[in-house]
Image (cartoon, rainbow, N blue to C red; front, top):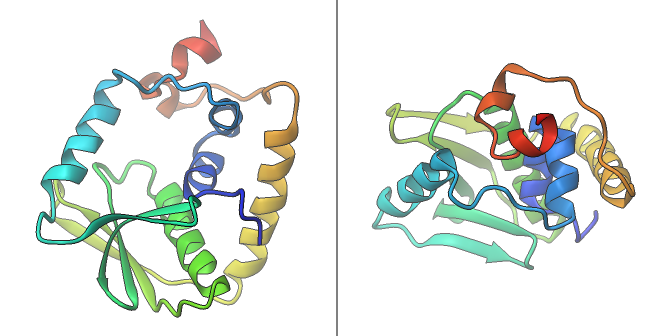
Length: 164
C-alpha cells in the first residue's frame, strides 16, 4: 500500500487522469469554481451533529464516521458515482490495511435524499492495487496525459487549462 496515494488521487484517477496529473503537481483550478463551492457548502451544512472531516495520516479525509465500522462521504450529485464508489472503497482498503476493520462505506447525497452502500469485495483489492500502480506512474510523468474530451469536461474547473 502506498502512503502517498490519497482518496483524491483515487477519485481523480476515476474521473480524469489529466486532472489527476495537474492535482499531483499542485496545479489547482478549483478556487472560485461554483460546483466546488456548492459541494463545500453542502459538506459543511449537512449532518451537523456528526464529527466530520476526519483526516488520517494526511492520506485520507473521511467526511464522517457513523459508527466504528461505517464511513460516510457526502456528495452533491451522483453524476460521477463510479469515482465516488472507488474513493470510498479505497478508504475501506486503506483503513483495513492499517488495522481498522470497516464493514462498509456510505455515499450520502443530501440534495437527492439518497444514500448508497459501498462494500469492499475481495476482487476489489487487485483493482485498487492496479490503480495505485497507474496513479504512481501518472504522478511521476513529466507531462500530463492526453485525454479525449468527455461530456463532464464542460463543468470541470480544469476545462480552460485542458481545452482552450
